[in-house]
Length: 390
Ligand code: APR
Ligand code: PHB
Image 1 (cartoon, rainbow, N blue to C red):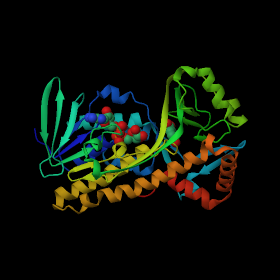
Image 2 (cartoon, helix red, strand yellow; image 1 turned 180 degrees about the vertical axis):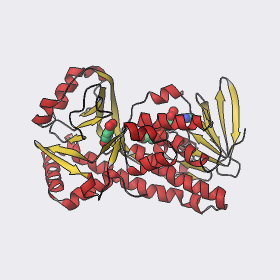
Image 3 (tube, rainbow, N blue to C red; image 1 turned 30 degrees about the vertical axis):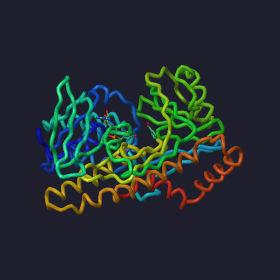
Image 4 (cartoon, rainbow, N blue to C red; image 1 turned 45 degrees about the vertical axis):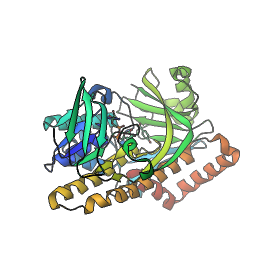
């Protein structure tokens, strides 16, 4: 088989890239090692920057997002018994974010791809990119016991942090930067109305908490937990007791509780690999970088990467020019590092770190106090939260 671009990974990066390219008449085949149902069962974050919403509109996949997504004009920061609203619209001259689950984004992009009759091969085993440093790259995989080969012009590695693309690059060609945080997030989904109409990010001596949502009747809540914690340690009752302790009384008292139907623990890390291009192989999204979920930048970075990559590839096919693809890595990394910095900063400011002790706690309190008193500091938070320009 032959195609123009083989995309490894059918997550949001791979799917959005596929739509952006196919709109310009560029052929793609997407390969994923798991099934469509499995991909759609993964629960991820849910705050979209306007740039991400615009990309969904551009590929004609934003109808449900506009019907069911919840536009948010601000969020709350709580600390030291205080509840301070960050007014995103006011601080950024009119920008806001859209609360819409990543699983739904993936669903809508899969539907758009299917409607356009484009090829996605799920359950593809042993996917491997080859010869991408030369001019004749190809990808091999096995499906139902049969070996296949797809020849192509380019390979897009959109296969997440554990994918094969980054691992296929020669050792000396890649530099990795990593920071592991000494705690995790325990998250639940429950069919109870959200405690507040906007998100609450809570700094508390017992640890961070986040009150988010998926709809007016479905809440997504998190508490900072120890990396040693097991899910069995966390009954629903323990979770509800703990999150209420970490919120100001007014929210704790009004929080509606109920049985959770999803519960998971996620570690937090910041990771960047440089560069994001190796000859005719490009990395995008989680394949190239991971951010801690504080600030919800993961999906939005995946979207900006594939925006840059699609423009570069479109320029290649349209103008026979390498200029865009030569510049892709530098352009994407410049935005990636700013989001890495922002999510690291927000994580550092909002979580309890045992190693920094009482000193660390006072520094956090001073920082939060400054942040809410200074319009300049609030603006810096808000403009990063709504998303820096592409
Ligand atoms: N071969 C084929 N497919 C693979 C392989 C492989 N060896 N390894 C991984 N994949 C697939 C996974 O099954 C998954 O469907 O690649 C896809 C990668 O999707 P994501 O992990 O969702 O990554 P990405 O599309 O870059 O989306 C980034 O996802 O993890 C969140 O917070 C992150 O919101 C961000 C977003
Ligand atoms: C979520 O809704 O899952 C969510 C929201 C905001 C974050 C992280 C996660 O910063």
